[in-house]
Image (cartoon, rainbow, N blue to C red; front, top):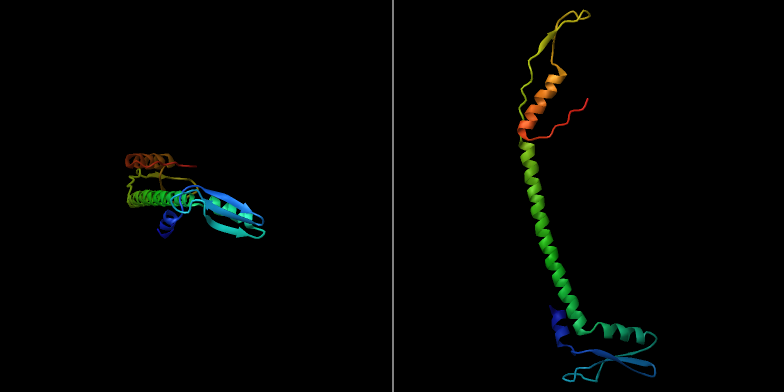
Length: 148
């Protein structure tokens, strides 16, 4: 806020160049304040570059930069709020999905007797298990891909 007040207090209007032998200056065109008077005086090897910078960084430019900075800060704050909401919604959805329980009723076993085995084995058909899983997951709204 201090920079905005300083820019508003500075000489208004266009700032223009004045120069002489070995010096450069920035003057204000505002007849109400420093009209025609030197605002900044520069000498030395960098006088021209310093004067061009000072002339370009006049109060109107500083105020425009401050306005843009405030706009960007507001936009950043709005985006932050939006994405915090998206993250919260996503976290809630993940928690809901992780808390979900799916009950699968497996098909009944059948007995398999093989000549090489000394006992009978209870066996579940792989196809029947896949079918039971798919039906249970479909009913719960969960996509299931079975490989192999």
